[in-house]
Length: 264
Image (tube, rainbow, N blue to C red; front, side, top):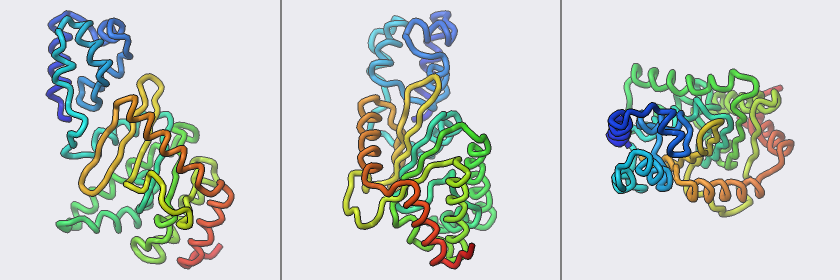
């Protein structure tokens, strides 16, 4: 959304002589939520904007100039990447590709090489490093709690070739067996389901409201509205109900890795 809205909020807060904590108390929000809005990483909900207007005596200015819900983000994943690092719980849904935080170097490189217009080797390397950097959140043995719901086509699409796919699938299997992530596969035989429209990431935090991030071709959207987030959480739960249980998902992943040439 850019930082203009956040800059304006900060200016109004400073003009009122309030600290972030004092504004947070007056608006019944958390200090970190205020900080994220001011930094341009979050969009306040309509209710939050109304409370901020009241706390700052700004009439309905913050509510009126709230970024539109259908706006897109130029570097559309950037705000979500920041939030991913702070989340205590992440639930991913992947329709066609392995989620970024679970990708291996070989797989990430193969995905990044599909960009159009094509990227040079140096730019490709930079993107791979950034992608792998995201997976560092899994270095902590407990936080964040990560669930991944994978459409079976994620396993069947040979990204980077047989060897890369075998390594990628067994990397995910290893994370599941180490009880670091929980993975469920939605079999192709399930037929259509609500999440088929694109990828989805749900995030929860210790001290701020949950968010959802959805992505399609060349567009990404961070959803902050409690109503929208709740609806997307419901869609995720419904799809999860159609997925294979953990043990069966693990067995299917091992079987597909074997088809790609992995040997135990």
